[in-house]
Length: 170
Image 1 (cartoon, rainbow, N blue to C red):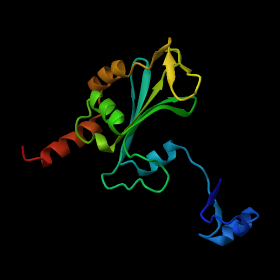
Image 2: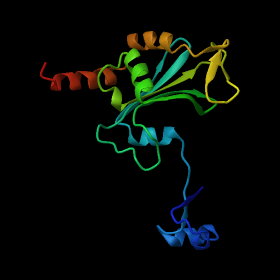
Image 3: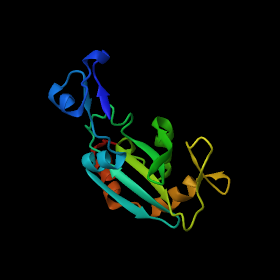
Image 4: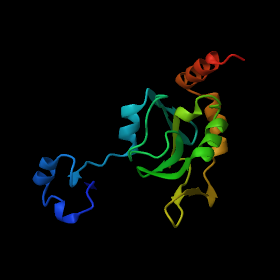
């Protein structure tokens, strides 16, 4: 992908070699990575919880991680994975609500959750806009998954919440 840091096309390099020599001016060639790359690169801890009809991929991000700069727009978020793409992306208050429902009441602002439905157990299709997923004509069963996740919550997330609670005075 070209990353245009100069708005004047006549200053853009004409080939990859020229782009490599230009450094920070003009346009540079940049490799595109998916969110998995960045989450695994920056996460303090991560893993997968196998539930009945879904795998929940979880990531604990550092408290001081600066997410500005174009990789992602919110540190904490939730989404569904289907055919290696993210759907039903929830940010800010929507993500916070889902994370709290999953039992992550403290430290939710450092957590990313991705739900990957087991297609052998739950039929999933995209809506016509390819923005969200459906199963049997309904939204994904996030509430059911949250209930099961609370029972099987990873120790690393429990430890994060315990650490935060131990720092509070009340």
